[in-house]
Image 1 (cartoon, rainbow, N blue to C red):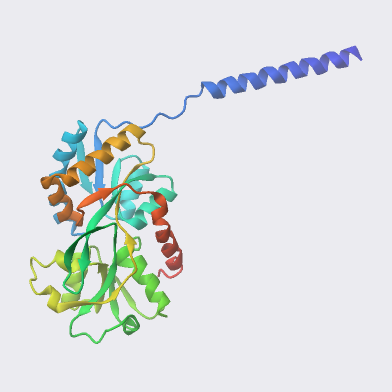
Image 2: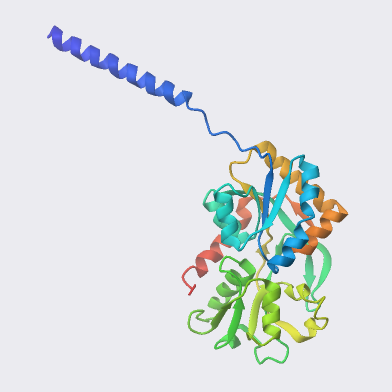
Length: 310
């Protein structure tokens, strides 16, 4: 009996030692350190022609570097997915993510929102900006003025220019609302994938497609070269509001540097030179604090179209 008691006691002591040892080992394991950049890498998504966009965003490097006190390198992504992948692999610190791309990155634990863009509202049918700042935009479907397409239902049997499947205004919103209108996106229309909303407008003008899904009002992106584009191209559809683009940061960025970067972009948006760059690139005229719940509508629309992609 004494032997059994002794064995039991020794076993209990051994278990206690092992437990304490494991606890100490867990306590000794340091938590992952927050990321502090020595050079900040920023990437844009290509809403315009990539080469043109690269020329426009380069001057932003010096402005950001001056605000942050570290070198800044800015580049343009091939597409939305490549930007998200670059943030996931820690190659890119800050991404200009449209709403659908932001939701994808956030839900994968890759990125957190810093700010949400503000734009001037758009007055239709002129396409001119209002004086009101808004944190949303809309998708429009445009056709040539002499087209017999007057409403969504008339798109059946037509060739339609869409952007990448992660584009809110160039794919998700129009696809969702075409579906609501009884259009089978797989069989009733021919999808033509085009990179860049300006390129989609040009494809329409060149009769490469019968209609184009773009942001409101993408006609302004080609107005400098095609003065009468508003006379030649008209919208037949306006979507419900879409949350404006985000500037998002990789999720392991230190809290202090998140604030630094956020403040830098807000300050630059108030600086005449910086404001011009941001306005030329994305029509951004300011930034406001935001939160993830504003993008639940994006998740809802993504679920609506997830079974309609070809």
